[in-house]
Length: 250
Image 1 (cartoon, rainbow, N blue to C red):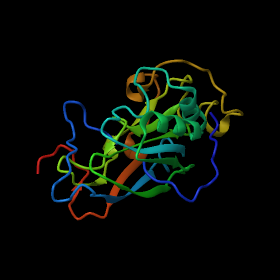
Image 2: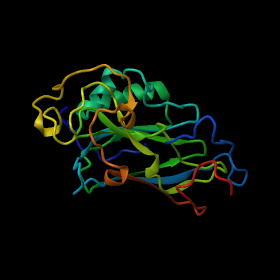
Image 3: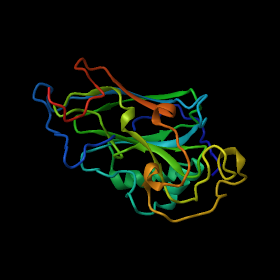
């Protein structure tokens, strides 16, 4: 898959691991805040792969802010992804995927994550959110065949169980997903990856369901998240729960 770059845009906004069904996040608004309580967030996605075993850019991607009912906003695990999501995963072309995801999820806000995010670079954006909102995003790892960086639970809570905004490092909620649309080659070395291919559709197609890379067992080594990416939430609210579990008791 060739990394296709979109024209640089001046504005883009938003992009959660939701708790599992055994660890739900209450969405009732804290009475101290009122029904119209909003918080301004800044999200920073840092590419930490510079000088590491897999030196790779992140391609253009998608992000959304979704509600509590969007439990699997990106894809159905174990099922084949749509052609538009295949284009995001293999070619770094997210425009049609975003359109399809917006139709599916009716997000509060959504946009394109502009790439490439080169090794050592940080992409950041700012938005307003309310209790019960979640962040989700997906971006292609360029030096792979069809691997996507996204939240482990497909969304990340922006507020805790007390309707207080979360801030700090939430990188532990990120993982690598294999879209199952193209046979994997060794990351960073495959002839059908990144700049080494002559066409974004180059590579051996396959139709496996979406899986965590850790579950695919393709025989290749993938970097730990600490050597790949970091995601940080910042906000302008005084109450401080840095990177906490959203259901943490206070």
